[in-house]
Length: 188
Image (cartoon, rainbow, N blue to C red; front, top):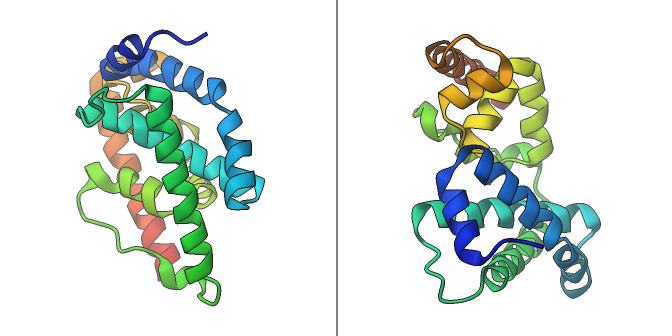
């Protein structure tokens, strides 16, 4: 059973392991939404799972940014977010029926801080993971832990066995630079 909405909000705003644990709990608790989305919007399982993962990530970001005001239950807010993403999938499917994927590749901003967020929003998750695999395991862990789960540099250093946060921070920016170059190669 999940903690109260208020406990979830506070835990997600803490970031780090609390955010990761609660996001995982929410993901498991409301997995039934995936099947409702498949039936209601006529999506395949992959599309519904992708929309669901995007909804979980989006709701966590809204909580962190203070956009979720608690005017509805968290489960209702999540379902609405999920439904919106399912509709987006249908629109994308209809509008991209005759367009090559490479033509839709977004232009990446120069700011390294927003690069991962832009990729998560705009790129196919599998493509992102493929690019991240090319970076190596440590880069992949650092980028996912910092940008997706919200761990701070000290927590990441502890998780992957680095001596200090400064070494993690410097490696993170080298990893972001490598990722930017990989994206540039793939887009050209």
